[in-house]
Length: 325
Length: 253
Image (cartoon, rainbow over all chains, first blue to last red; front, top):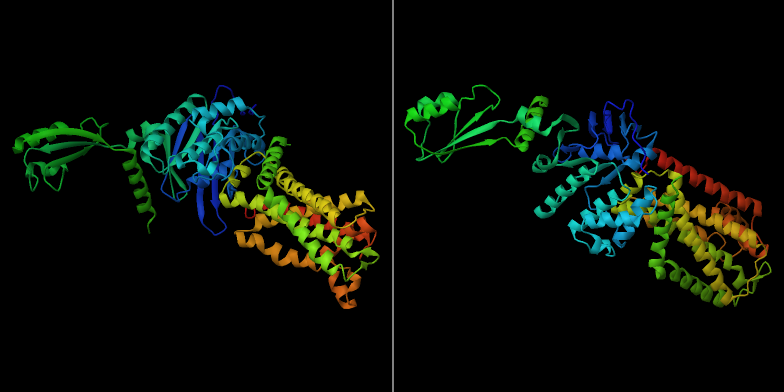
């Protein structure tokens, strides 16, 4: 049986993973994590977004015990990852970024190895279910090196699930996989969450975070820039755009529209108006009136909302500008 | 104690040896047979006895040691280096296992393989020369202790190595010469006095001497000293492995 997470007060939900002031400086002097603090709630899907080298992998490697933190403390299920490493590691499953698998073993053997390594009694029935859920059952006697990249990725997930973890770390699970497999992975992540597994995934695919995460953490240069509910983040930082397609192209904006801060496309056929949807007067009525008065003929209108990607780029850019001397 | 983890590591290491049975077991037997042909038959025809023991039989403990030392190091170093090389070591490092359990799994399997090879070589030698083991208990004790301590040494090399060249470096450039110059094929007393003194700085001399004593009651140094040296070597290796796991040297960043 997996150990029960500690809870000081049953009425207050305690985080399943709690990271407090964790920093990591490698021996070559590179500081990969800078005073990171983060609480991850039971049963949620948290996406850690960040560019390459941001510190995502270092953070999850530290929680899993592969990298030693320089300072700070981490608890999993209320247990310290160093003092109670046997308990915390049994709760954790890790799917690494690279396709790190042996070459000559069979799928079934490597799963049995993973389960045993985490001190679990052999349970062929459970492993069969895991393989079937991942569409790998037919490949159970295949040699690992004979599998495709997508299948290897699924074997890594199966290995991470072999000991029935309650917290699953997925380090860039869909890096380099095709669209179909990516969608399959997302469906799998949802199913795991429904079964009570807390999922922390790192990714630099914004659409991935947008599609499956409950909360999003943005990390860059070892700093956790923000963590927020995905919808709240988009509400807070997201902008909407009102796009007006013109019947005939124009070379310059009419004087009456200059005050409205419109962007005219290069071909002169489209005007874009950016507004805050939460503001009482979003200015769309005034814009339409001004266009009408200017004599321009509207062909079409539509709105778009800022994607998580744009929010992310904006945040990272702002931070870079702030830190630049 | 995470006995399941020890069991799976041990099982998978042993499985690897049996899947490559020709490389793991047949190759050392063939090499030993060739040594018997060259040293036992060709040279043994000219050297009748060494310290009252027929030359063919005299070299058996040395040949066993040569194979055991090289195989222990090769098996244990490869066993831990390969997961480092492929990256699969992440699984061991993130599992709820102590360093003692990792050691028992990897070193236990490497030592078992060497022990089996030692017994196979002993059996092979029986086809070439008549053998008599004066102290079977001590023979087994020296054999097991040597298998464990040199598997530990190999494990350290596997942890230390950052490429395949380094993995081969110490076994090829240090261990093999030390075994050849450690009295595998001759008695230290056959050397000039000055070289006898120099030879005593070779730790392998003590291993071979003690092991040979268990067969023929003939030794270059006292048996107690031999046993002491093996135990010291074992303790030093354990200390180094403990330090590596405590600091995460070349394992954790």
